[in-house]
Amino acid sequence: MLEKESLDILRQAVEKLDEEFASLPASSAQAPEFERIAEVLAATAERLQDNYPYFHPLYAGQMLKPPHPVARLAYALAQWINPNNHALDGGRASSAMEKEAVSALARMFGWSAHLGHLTSGGTMANLEALWVAGQLAPGKAILASEQAHYTHKRISGVLQLNFEAIPCDGRARMDVEALKKRLAQGDVGTVVATMGTTATGSVDPLAEILELRERHGFRVHCDAAYGGYFGLAGNLTAETRRAFDHGRDVDSIVIDPHKHGLQPYGCGCVLFRDPGVGRLYKHDSPYTYFSSKELHLGEISLECSRPGAAAVALWATQMMLPLEKGGEFAKGLERCREAALDLHQRIARDKRFVAAFAPELDIVVFAPRAGSVSDSSALTRKIFGAAAKRNLHLAVAELPVEFFGADLGGMKQDRASLTCLRSVLMKPEHRDWIDSIWAILLESTGEVLHS
Image 1 (cartoon, rainbow, N blue to C red):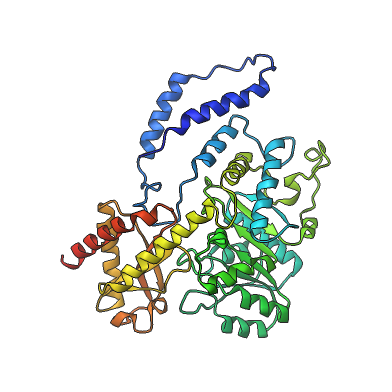
Image 2: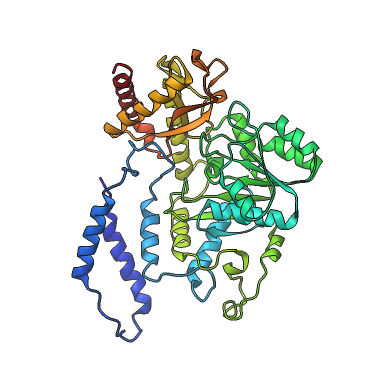
Protein backbone atom coordinates (compact mmCIF):
# COMPACT_ATOMS: atom_id res chain seq x y z
CA MET A 1 0.00 0.00 0.00
CA LEU A 2 2.90 2.40 0.60
CA GLU A 3 4.07 4.33 -2.47
CA LYS A 4 7.65 3.31 -3.39
CA GLU A 5 8.15 4.37 -7.01
CA SER A 6 9.38 7.80 -5.94
CA LEU A 7 12.54 6.31 -4.40
CA ASP A 8 14.14 6.23 -7.85
CA ILE A 9 13.32 9.93 -8.29
CA LEU A 10 15.02 10.68 -4.98
CA ARG A 11 18.19 8.92 -6.06
CA GLN A 12 18.29 10.99 -9.26
CA ALA A 13 17.79 14.19 -7.27
CA VAL A 14 20.61 13.28 -4.86
CA GLU A 15 22.93 12.72 -7.81
CA LYS A 16 21.92 16.13 -9.20
CA LEU A 17 22.61 17.77 -5.82
CA ASP A 18 25.98 16.03 -5.63
CA GLU A 19 27.13 17.71 -8.85
CA GLU A 20 27.59 21.00 -6.97
CA PHE A 21 30.15 19.45 -4.64
CA ALA A 22 32.09 17.35 -7.15
CA SER A 23 35.12 19.68 -7.00
CA LEU A 24 35.65 19.17 -3.28
CA PRO A 25 38.61 16.99 -2.22
CA ALA A 26 37.76 13.53 -1.02
CA SER A 27 36.64 13.45 2.59
CA SER A 28 38.28 11.18 5.12
CA ALA A 29 35.01 10.65 6.98
CA GLN A 30 34.40 7.07 8.00
CA ALA A 31 32.40 5.14 5.42
CA PRO A 32 28.85 4.29 6.55
CA GLU A 33 28.31 0.76 7.79
CA PHE A 34 25.61 -0.01 5.25
CA GLU A 35 25.06 -3.55 6.41
CA ARG A 36 24.43 -2.38 9.97
CA ILE A 37 22.26 0.49 8.72
CA ALA A 38 20.13 -2.01 6.81
CA GLU A 39 19.66 -4.07 9.96
CA VAL A 40 18.67 -1.05 12.03
CA LEU A 41 16.29 0.25 9.36
CA ALA A 42 14.61 -3.15 9.11
CA ALA A 43 14.11 -3.10 12.87
CA THR A 44 12.81 0.45 12.62
CA ALA A 45 10.30 -0.53 9.92
CA GLU A 46 9.11 -3.38 12.10
CA ARG A 47 8.53 -1.02 15.03
CA LEU A 48 6.69 1.43 12.79
CA GLN A 49 4.24 -1.28 11.80
CA ASP A 50 2.57 -0.60 15.16
CA ASN A 51 0.57 2.31 13.74
CA TYR A 52 -2.86 3.08 12.40
CA PRO A 53 -2.89 3.34 8.57
CA TYR A 54 -2.88 7.14 8.58
CA PHE A 55 -2.18 7.28 4.84
CA HIS A 56 -5.26 5.21 3.87
CA PRO A 57 -8.77 6.62 3.19
CA LEU A 58 -10.20 4.24 5.79
CA TYR A 59 -8.33 6.25 8.36
CA ALA A 60 -10.85 9.05 8.91
CA GLY A 61 -10.22 9.89 12.54
CA GLN A 62 -7.72 12.51 13.67
CA MET A 63 -6.14 15.34 11.67
CA LEU A 64 -3.51 13.23 9.98
CA LYS A 65 -2.94 13.89 6.29
CA PRO A 66 -0.06 12.22 4.45
CA PRO A 67 2.49 14.60 2.94
CA HIS A 68 2.54 14.91 -0.80
CA PRO A 69 5.28 12.73 -2.38
CA VAL A 70 7.11 15.84 -3.59
CA ALA A 71 7.17 17.20 -0.02
CA ARG A 72 8.45 13.92 1.35
CA LEU A 73 11.15 13.68 -1.31
CA ALA A 74 12.22 17.33 -1.04
CA TYR A 75 12.49 17.02 2.74
CA ALA A 76 14.61 13.88 2.40
CA LEU A 77 16.77 15.48 -0.30
CA ALA A 78 17.52 18.44 1.96
CA GLN A 79 18.77 16.06 4.65
CA TRP A 80 21.92 15.43 2.62
CA ILE A 81 22.71 19.09 3.42
CA ASN A 82 20.69 19.41 6.67
CA PRO A 83 20.34 23.20 6.53
CA ASN A 84 19.47 25.31 9.56
CA ASN A 85 17.20 28.26 8.73
CA HIS A 86 18.21 30.35 11.71
CA ALA A 87 20.97 32.27 9.94
CA LEU A 88 22.07 32.45 6.32
CA ASP A 89 25.38 30.78 7.22
CA GLY A 90 23.48 27.60 8.00
CA GLY A 91 20.79 27.67 5.33
CA ARG A 92 21.47 30.01 2.44
CA ALA A 93 19.32 28.40 -0.25
CA SER A 94 16.68 27.06 2.14
CA SER A 95 16.26 30.50 3.79
CA ALA A 96 15.50 32.02 0.39
CA MET A 97 13.06 29.19 -0.30
CA GLU A 98 11.37 29.82 3.05
CA LYS A 99 10.89 33.50 2.28
CA GLU A 100 9.36 32.64 -1.11
CA ALA A 101 7.08 29.96 0.35
CA VAL A 102 5.92 32.20 3.21
CA SER A 103 5.23 35.04 0.76
CA ALA A 104 2.99 32.67 -1.22
CA LEU A 105 1.04 31.88 1.96
CA ALA A 106 0.69 35.60 2.69
CA ARG A 107 -0.61 36.25 -0.84
CA MET A 108 -3.17 33.50 -0.33
CA PHE A 109 -4.64 35.67 2.43
CA GLY A 110 -4.41 38.79 0.29
CA TRP A 111 -1.25 40.30 1.78
CA SER A 112 1.67 41.64 -0.20
CA ALA A 113 3.45 43.47 2.63
CA HIS A 114 3.87 41.17 5.64
CA LEU A 115 6.32 39.72 8.14
CA GLY A 116 6.38 35.98 8.65
CA HIS A 117 8.31 32.77 8.89
CA LEU A 118 7.89 29.04 9.38
CA THR A 119 7.75 27.46 12.82
CA SER A 120 7.80 23.95 14.23
CA GLY A 121 3.99 23.94 14.27
CA GLY A 122 0.84 25.83 15.13
CA THR A 123 1.54 25.94 18.84
CA MET A 124 4.79 27.85 18.41
CA ALA A 125 3.23 30.03 15.71
CA ASN A 126 0.34 30.99 17.99
CA LEU A 127 2.79 31.61 20.82
CA GLU A 128 4.63 34.16 18.68
CA ALA A 129 1.37 35.85 17.64
CA LEU A 130 0.18 36.16 21.25
CA TRP A 131 3.66 37.23 22.38
CA VAL A 132 3.52 40.12 19.89
CA ALA A 133 -0.06 40.87 21.01
CA GLY A 134 1.09 41.03 24.64
CA GLN A 135 3.98 43.32 23.73
CA LEU A 136 1.66 45.72 21.92
CA ALA A 137 -1.14 45.67 24.51
CA PRO A 138 0.51 44.80 27.83
CA GLY A 139 -1.81 43.78 30.64
CA LYS A 140 -4.87 43.46 28.42
CA ALA A 141 -6.90 40.27 28.05
CA ILE A 142 -6.72 37.66 25.31
CA LEU A 143 -10.16 36.36 24.27
CA ALA A 144 -10.93 33.18 22.31
CA SER A 145 -13.98 30.95 22.02
CA GLU A 146 -14.61 27.94 24.24
CA GLN A 147 -13.97 25.77 21.18
CA ALA A 148 -10.67 27.46 20.29
CA HIS A 149 -7.60 25.27 20.57
CA TYR A 150 -6.54 24.69 24.17
CA THR A 151 -3.08 26.04 23.42
CA HIS A 152 -4.33 29.64 23.51
CA LYS A 153 -5.15 29.33 27.18
CA ARG A 154 -1.93 27.47 27.89
CA ILE A 155 0.23 29.86 25.86
CA SER A 156 -1.37 32.83 27.60
CA GLY A 157 -0.36 31.26 30.90
CA VAL A 158 3.21 30.81 29.71
CA LEU A 159 3.31 34.45 28.60
CA GLN A 160 1.57 35.58 31.80
CA LEU A 161 -1.31 37.09 29.84
CA ASN A 162 -4.89 37.14 31.08
CA PHE A 163 -6.96 34.68 29.02
CA GLU A 164 -10.76 34.43 28.93
CA ALA A 165 -12.98 32.02 27.00
CA ILE A 166 -16.08 33.32 25.22
CA PRO A 167 -19.13 31.00 24.94
CA CYS A 168 -20.07 29.44 21.61
CA ASP A 169 -23.32 29.33 19.70
CA GLY A 170 -25.04 26.08 18.70
CA ARG A 171 -22.66 25.65 15.76
CA ALA A 172 -19.49 25.79 17.86
CA ARG A 173 -18.60 29.32 16.73
CA MET A 174 -17.78 32.27 18.97
CA ASP A 175 -21.04 33.81 20.19
CA VAL A 176 -20.97 37.43 19.01
CA GLU A 177 -23.48 38.61 21.61
CA ALA A 178 -21.37 37.11 24.39
CA LEU A 179 -18.30 38.77 22.89
CA LYS A 180 -20.09 42.14 22.84
CA LYS A 181 -20.91 41.83 26.54
CA ARG A 182 -17.29 41.07 27.41
CA LEU A 183 -15.95 43.88 25.24
CA ALA A 184 -18.25 46.33 27.00
CA GLN A 185 -16.26 45.68 30.17
CA GLY A 186 -13.10 46.95 28.47
CA ASP A 187 -9.44 45.98 28.88
CA VAL A 188 -9.32 43.56 25.91
CA GLY A 189 -6.12 43.51 23.87
CA THR A 190 -6.67 40.67 21.39
CA VAL A 191 -9.53 38.52 20.12
CA VAL A 192 -8.59 35.18 18.58
CA ALA A 193 -10.85 34.15 15.70
CA THR A 194 -10.62 30.45 14.87
CA MET A 195 -10.95 29.49 11.20
CA GLY A 196 -11.66 25.80 11.57
CA THR A 197 -11.86 24.52 15.12
CA THR A 198 -10.11 21.24 15.76
CA ALA A 199 -13.22 19.52 17.13
CA THR A 200 -15.82 20.43 14.51
CA GLY A 201 -14.13 22.57 11.84
CA SER A 202 -16.32 25.55 12.75
CA VAL A 203 -15.39 29.02 11.50
CA ASP A 204 -15.81 31.98 13.83
CA PRO A 205 -17.81 34.98 12.46
CA LEU A 206 -14.75 36.99 11.50
CA ALA A 207 -16.60 39.81 9.72
CA GLU A 208 -18.66 40.56 12.83
CA ILE A 209 -15.57 40.38 15.06
CA LEU A 210 -13.78 42.89 12.82
CA GLU A 211 -16.76 45.25 13.01
CA LEU A 212 -16.43 45.17 16.81
CA ARG A 213 -12.71 45.92 16.48
CA GLU A 214 -13.59 49.25 14.87
CA ARG A 215 -15.52 50.18 17.99
CA HIS A 216 -13.27 48.74 20.70
CA GLY A 217 -9.77 48.90 19.20
CA PHE A 218 -8.45 45.39 19.96
CA ARG A 219 -6.14 43.30 17.77
CA VAL A 220 -7.58 40.35 15.84
CA HIS A 221 -5.48 37.21 15.60
CA CYS A 222 -6.71 34.59 13.14
CA ASP A 223 -5.94 31.02 14.16
CA ALA A 224 -6.28 29.34 10.78
CA ALA A 225 -3.96 26.48 11.68
CA TYR A 226 -6.47 23.91 10.47
CA GLY A 227 -8.82 25.70 8.10
CA GLY A 228 -6.68 28.42 6.56
CA TYR A 229 -6.24 26.80 3.17
CA PHE A 230 -10.01 26.50 2.67
CA GLY A 231 -10.07 30.12 1.57
CA LEU A 232 -9.08 28.65 -1.82
CA ALA A 233 -12.08 26.30 -1.97
CA GLY A 234 -14.95 27.24 -4.24
CA ASN A 235 -17.70 25.29 -2.47
CA LEU A 236 -18.01 27.02 0.92
CA THR A 237 -21.32 28.41 2.11
CA ALA A 238 -21.82 32.13 1.62
CA GLU A 239 -21.50 32.66 5.37
CA THR A 240 -18.21 30.79 5.61
CA ARG A 241 -16.93 32.44 2.43
CA ARG A 242 -17.59 35.85 3.99
CA ALA A 243 -15.44 34.96 6.99
CA PHE A 244 -12.53 33.83 4.84
CA ASP A 245 -12.78 36.89 2.60
CA HIS A 246 -12.11 39.06 5.65
CA GLY A 247 -8.87 37.23 6.49
CA ARG A 248 -6.90 40.02 4.82
CA ASP A 249 -8.18 42.46 7.49
CA VAL A 250 -6.77 40.75 10.61
CA ASP A 251 -3.55 41.65 12.39
CA SER A 252 -1.91 38.22 12.46
CA ILE A 253 -2.53 34.76 11.05
CA VAL A 254 -1.34 31.27 11.89
CA ILE A 255 -1.58 28.41 9.40
CA ASP A 256 -0.23 24.86 9.59
CA PRO A 257 1.14 23.54 6.28
CA HIS A 258 1.57 20.17 8.02
CA LYS A 259 -2.22 19.86 8.11
CA HIS A 260 -3.92 20.69 4.80
CA GLY A 261 -0.70 21.98 3.22
CA LEU A 262 0.52 18.43 2.49
CA GLN A 263 3.71 18.80 4.56
CA PRO A 264 5.55 16.51 6.97
CA TYR A 265 5.28 17.44 10.63
CA GLY A 266 6.77 20.23 11.98
CA CYS A 267 5.75 22.94 9.64
CA GLY A 268 3.69 25.84 10.93
CA CYS A 269 3.66 29.47 9.87
CA VAL A 270 2.99 32.82 11.57
CA LEU A 271 2.20 35.94 9.55
CA PHE A 272 1.85 39.58 10.61
CA ARG A 273 0.16 42.19 8.44
CA ASP A 274 2.41 44.95 9.80
CA PRO A 275 6.10 44.25 9.04
CA GLY A 276 6.92 46.80 11.73
CA VAL A 277 6.35 44.23 14.48
CA GLY A 278 9.79 42.91 13.55
CA ARG A 279 11.23 45.51 15.90
CA LEU A 280 9.88 43.48 18.83
CA TYR A 281 12.16 40.58 17.91
CA LYS A 282 15.35 42.64 17.98
CA HIS A 283 18.17 40.92 19.83
CA ASP A 284 21.95 40.77 19.73
CA SER A 285 23.94 37.80 18.50
CA PRO A 286 27.73 38.30 18.49
CA TYR A 287 28.47 35.62 15.92
CA THR A 288 25.36 34.66 13.95
CA TYR A 289 24.17 37.46 11.69
CA PHE A 290 27.30 39.00 10.20
CA SER A 291 27.79 36.94 7.06
CA SER A 292 25.20 38.91 5.09
CA LYS A 293 23.31 42.19 5.21
CA GLU A 294 20.18 40.33 4.07
CA LEU A 295 17.50 39.46 6.61
CA HIS A 296 18.36 36.38 8.65
CA LEU A 297 15.18 34.53 9.63
CA GLY A 298 16.45 34.16 13.18
CA GLU A 299 16.13 37.93 13.49
CA ILE A 300 12.31 37.68 13.23
CA SER A 301 11.72 34.43 15.10
CA LEU A 302 11.58 33.37 18.73
CA GLU A 303 12.89 29.95 17.75
CA CYS A 304 16.58 29.61 17.03
CA SER A 305 17.60 26.52 15.06
CA ARG A 306 14.87 25.46 12.65
CA PRO A 307 14.86 22.77 9.94
CA GLY A 308 15.62 24.18 6.52
CA ALA A 309 14.27 20.91 5.15
CA ALA A 310 10.75 21.99 6.13
CA ALA A 311 11.11 25.12 4.00
CA VAL A 312 12.50 23.12 1.09
CA ALA A 313 9.57 20.70 1.22
CA LEU A 314 6.98 23.49 1.37
CA TRP A 315 8.63 25.42 -1.46
CA ALA A 316 8.69 22.32 -3.66
CA THR A 317 5.05 21.49 -2.92
CA GLN A 318 3.85 25.01 -3.69
CA MET A 319 5.90 24.99 -6.88
CA MET A 320 4.10 21.82 -7.98
CA LEU A 321 0.68 22.79 -6.58
CA PRO A 322 0.30 26.59 -6.63
CA LEU A 323 -1.98 28.17 -4.02
CA GLU A 324 -4.62 29.43 -6.43
CA LYS A 325 -8.40 29.20 -6.61
CA GLY A 326 -9.55 26.66 -9.16
CA GLY A 327 -6.19 24.90 -9.19
CA GLU A 328 -5.39 21.30 -8.43
CA PHE A 329 -4.61 22.03 -4.78
CA ALA A 330 -7.88 23.93 -4.29
CA LYS A 331 -9.87 21.15 -5.96
CA GLY A 332 -8.43 18.69 -3.45
CA LEU A 333 -9.86 20.80 -0.62
CA GLU A 334 -13.21 20.95 -2.37
CA ARG A 335 -13.31 17.17 -2.58
CA CYS A 336 -12.66 16.93 1.15
CA ARG A 337 -15.63 19.16 1.84
CA GLU A 338 -17.80 17.23 -0.62
CA ALA A 339 -16.96 14.02 1.22
CA ALA A 340 -17.91 15.57 4.57
CA LEU A 341 -21.21 16.90 3.25
CA ASP A 342 -22.06 13.53 1.72
CA LEU A 343 -21.37 11.64 4.94
CA HIS A 344 -23.25 14.22 7.03
CA GLN A 345 -26.31 13.97 4.79
CA ARG A 346 -26.37 10.17 5.05
CA ILE A 347 -26.09 10.37 8.84
CA ALA A 348 -28.84 13.03 9.09
CA ARG A 349 -31.23 10.82 7.11
CA ASP A 350 -30.58 7.71 9.20
CA LYS A 351 -32.75 7.38 12.33
CA ARG A 352 -30.03 5.39 14.10
CA PHE A 353 -27.93 8.53 14.44
CA VAL A 354 -28.20 12.06 15.70
CA ALA A 355 -26.12 14.53 13.69
CA ALA A 356 -24.61 17.82 14.74
CA PHE A 357 -24.81 20.85 12.44
CA ALA A 358 -23.69 20.55 8.83
CA PRO A 359 -19.90 20.79 8.44
CA GLU A 360 -18.40 24.10 7.37
CA LEU A 361 -15.17 22.45 6.24
CA ASP A 362 -14.46 18.70 6.28
CA ILE A 363 -15.18 17.47 9.82
CA VAL A 364 -18.34 15.47 10.61
CA VAL A 365 -19.64 14.97 14.16
CA PHE A 366 -22.41 12.52 15.06
CA ALA A 367 -23.58 9.99 17.64
CA PRO A 368 -25.83 6.92 17.86
CA ARG A 369 -29.39 7.67 18.91
CA ALA A 370 -30.36 6.21 22.29
CA GLY A 371 -32.68 6.77 25.23
CA SER A 372 -30.31 9.15 26.95
CA VAL A 373 -27.08 11.05 26.39
CA SER A 374 -25.30 8.64 28.72
CA ASP A 375 -26.53 5.62 26.75
CA SER A 376 -25.55 7.25 23.47
CA SER A 377 -22.08 8.03 24.83
CA ALA A 378 -21.57 4.40 25.81
CA LEU A 379 -22.70 3.20 22.37
CA THR A 380 -20.32 5.63 20.71
CA ARG A 381 -17.31 3.92 22.20
CA LYS A 382 -18.60 0.50 21.19
CA ILE A 383 -19.17 1.60 17.58
CA PHE A 384 -15.71 3.17 17.56
CA GLY A 385 -14.22 -0.22 18.51
CA ALA A 386 -16.39 -2.22 16.13
CA ALA A 387 -15.46 0.01 13.21
CA ALA A 388 -11.74 -0.22 14.05
CA LYS A 389 -11.97 -4.03 13.86
CA ARG A 390 -13.16 -3.55 10.28
CA ASN A 391 -10.26 -1.15 9.52
CA LEU A 392 -12.41 1.99 9.64
CA HIS A 393 -10.70 4.33 12.07
CA LEU A 394 -12.77 7.22 13.42
CA ALA A 395 -12.19 9.51 16.41
CA VAL A 396 -14.12 10.12 19.62
CA ALA A 397 -14.90 13.59 20.96
CA GLU A 398 -16.66 15.04 24.00
CA LEU A 399 -18.87 17.96 22.93
CA PRO A 400 -21.68 20.08 24.41
CA VAL A 401 -25.15 18.62 23.85
CA GLU A 402 -26.24 21.97 22.37
CA PHE A 403 -24.33 21.11 19.21
CA PHE A 404 -26.83 18.31 18.46
CA GLY A 405 -30.05 20.30 18.25
CA ALA A 406 -32.64 21.49 20.72
CA ASP A 407 -34.33 18.12 21.16
CA LEU A 408 -31.18 15.96 21.00
CA GLY A 409 -33.07 13.64 18.71
CA GLY A 410 -35.46 12.82 21.54
CA MET A 411 -32.71 11.65 23.91
CA LYS A 412 -32.94 12.38 27.62
CA GLN A 413 -30.34 14.97 28.60
CA ASP A 414 -28.77 13.44 31.68
CA ARG A 415 -25.33 14.87 30.89
CA ALA A 416 -24.13 18.28 29.68
CA SER A 417 -21.82 16.76 27.08
CA LEU A 418 -22.12 13.92 24.61
CA THR A 419 -19.37 11.45 23.72
CA CYS A 420 -19.67 11.36 19.95
CA LEU A 421 -17.98 10.06 16.83
CA ARG A 422 -15.88 12.47 14.81
CA SER A 423 -14.61 11.96 11.30
CA VAL A 424 -11.98 14.19 9.68
CA LEU A 425 -12.25 13.68 5.92
CA MET A 426 -9.11 15.58 4.97
CA LYS A 427 -7.86 13.35 2.16
CA PRO A 428 -9.24 14.14 -1.31
CA GLU A 429 -9.59 10.37 -1.84
CA HIS A 430 -12.22 10.31 0.91
CA ARG A 431 -14.69 11.55 -1.71
CA ASP A 432 -14.35 8.24 -3.55
CA TRP A 433 -14.47 6.17 -0.36
CA ILE A 434 -17.67 7.45 1.25
CA ASP A 435 -19.69 4.43 0.08
CA SER A 436 -17.17 2.07 1.70
CA ILE A 437 -16.93 4.17 4.87
CA TRP A 438 -20.72 4.30 5.15
CA ALA A 439 -21.09 0.56 4.61
CA ILE A 440 -18.58 -0.25 7.35
CA LEU A 441 -20.16 2.29 9.70
CA LEU A 442 -23.61 0.75 9.20
CA GLU A 443 -22.29 -2.77 9.70
CA SER A 444 -20.47 -1.73 12.87
CA THR A 445 -23.49 0.15 14.21
CA GLY A 446 -25.77 -2.78 13.47
CA GLU A 447 -23.49 -5.14 15.36
CA VAL A 448 -23.46 -2.86 18.42
CA LEU A 449 -27.19 -2.09 18.45
CA HIS A 450 -28.19 -5.75 18.12
CA SER A 451 -25.65 -7.18 20.56
